[in-house]
Amino acid sequence: MSVFYYYTMKALSKKRVRILSCFFCVFVAAMIVSFTLGREWYSDKSQSLFSFALIHFSGYLFFLLMPVEVAFVYYLPFFKEFELIAVALLTAFSAQLIDYLIGFSVSSTVINNIISERRIIKAEKYIFKYGNLTILIFNLFPLSSSVIALAAGMIKYSFRDFVFYSSFGLIIKYVVLSLVF
Image 1 (cartoon, one colour):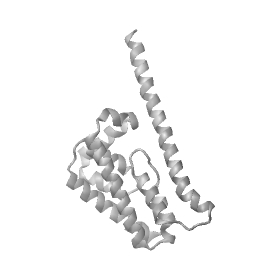
Image 2 (cartoon, rainbow, N blue to C red):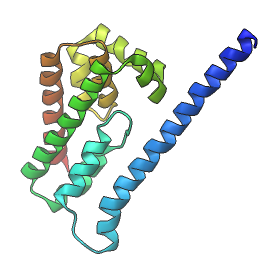
Image 3 (spheres, rainbow, N blue to C red):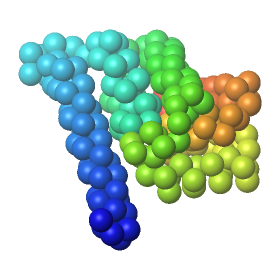
Image 4 (cartoon, rainbow, N blue to C red):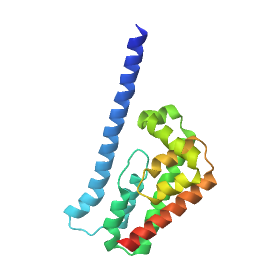
């Protein structure tokens, strides 16, 4: 077996794993939305905090990137602002904590098979260059904060700083969203 053939097959294998991972994530995201929002829409039931919590939590996991801010704005008319902000903060922070702990404890080889190594390196570069500001900005705006949480765990970033700046950014984001919409 030639060296070229070996590396070509290895690259194809990684690509297949990534493609299968993407299909699995899309499938899981579709199932979550179908079993929560879809069921509520088709059965003419009102929206529940549980469905919001499930969608919101799932959207903050690094392998299921979903526009959770849109879900927050959609659910605002159905609940008191304080309730929705509390659930959003609890679910977002719980999922980011899981992302951080996965990054902290799982090998980079496994993580690179799920999401691209380039995205992780880019996230790590931002954390090394800008530090706490990166974590704050990525939580403040609708950016991929879950990938930043994963990268922060991978580089063993200060847990205390991660918790503080993530929480601070999330609080500001959801208070502003509730005031604007």
